[in-house]
Length: 403
Image 1: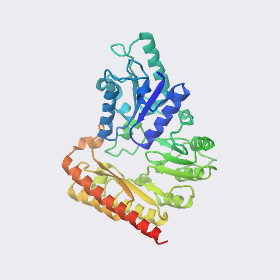
Image 2: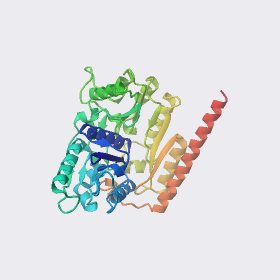
Image 3: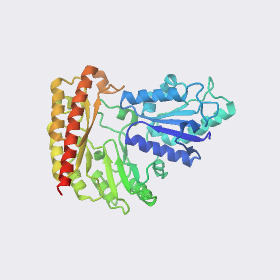
Image 4: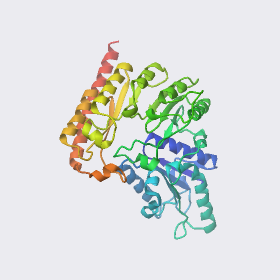
């Protein structure tokens, strides 16, 4: 039981896929997975740094797991090996051990292939030293990797039956001023198209039929090597995956408006296996705030994209992300965001209250919108979007009842 691993994931779909990668690597190395943390000798937290709330939750969970006297059937009378991996690991590095002394290892996103070896080393050290905790604990951190080896994506482990995430690119080079992702996941690195296709073919052979292609900005995808002698961009990749026998459905996230063109919409309308669903984060309806965010498009450019999507992809779903209370956001800026939600009529929206993230440019701008005002603006947009979504649902039900 000491070799049972409990893996808990916080954050986005990219973290979900990274957890699958880690789980597959651990199984390959002879470890077993468990959904019961009390049966685990190793507890690993896959973490997110995009918002403060996600980080606070992880620190709280580490404290709970390592509380003195807590019973753990997997590690016996000693606390389990505790690992913190993912974006928080890259953000805090060795400072994790100061904040949470019970953590045994810290591994950033580019170094996750090393986790099985690190865990084995810590277990061997405990076995030899007979130390459960204390002055001679072995602490390991790996946060200097520059890229992932391709083999980690080919363990064949997926959490869901019938569905798989496929990473097409790692990292991000957009540097939106509020976002910590480029600092914790590094610059964008695109996987070779052939490697992605091979991964999907192998998953199909294992019974997977539905796929979601993942990237911080899928529309910027460019394969490092040509396929069949031709360069491969994101639309070309969709075309190749759409042709794979056994694939029944293809989705993708996330699109960046700066790199999105009607050519993508035409492909979505044409390719029969591609879901008619587009997540296109607008973040703000104010040109002034969009410039401050370094988003690379204007309000009118976004509205034009939304109109083109609705025109080309008949019945397509359109969702978005919105941040309220960004530094310097005035009531007039906020009203422009409210208006773009009302005018675009998103099918759904994920609405966030701005929180400063360390090392980002926005952190230096000052968090000058009061919390109470952020709460008010959040509620206004949330209530508006709920009303839009409800009206859309009622209209759909009425149209179906009239058939």
